[in-house]
Image (cartoon, rainbow, N blue to C red; front, side):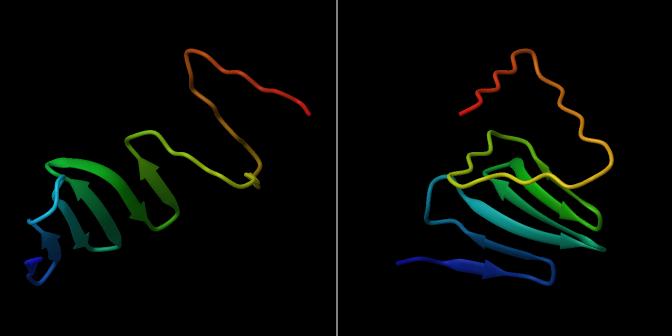
Length: 77
């Protein structure tokens, strides 16, 4: 049986591991896995604190794209 807790700004499910909690605050929505924030959606940006895996293509549109990485591999088909 799943137990889901709902309060004014929080939804959480404590019967799965890790425990996921969705929090809202002003113009932000955060998804927390156990006690670590996994993703935050804000007006104008989204922040991921763990690996992001995309099984489809990636299109980046913008004037400036910044990549901050120790190792970067780019393979052209």
